[in-house]
Amino acid sequence: MKRQFIAGANCPECGQMDKIQRIIDGDRQWMECVACGAEKSLDEKPAEATDALAQPVTLQPGPKK
Ligand SMILES: [Zn+2]
Image (cartoon, rainbow, N blue to C red; front, top):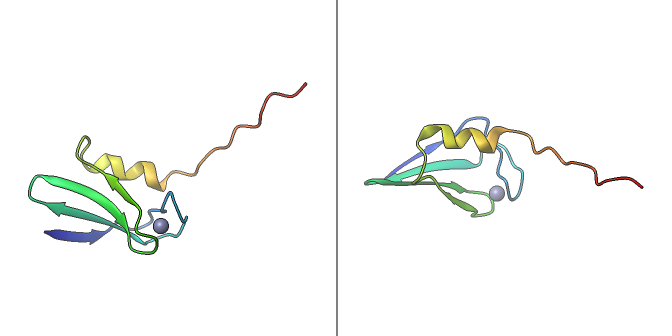
């Protein structure tokens, strides 16, 4: 089992930066936040999936009347 921090990645749960580890165990891999314990599977996508964490969340304002 191999763990490595993902530099610049924000946790989608607690929002802290540089707390995300990528964990590789055999042919499975997932991300885990060491601050809050949030996990996200990476099984379906290789390395690029980690980019989703680094992107800012865009909130769309609701429709105005
Ligand atoms: Zn977190």
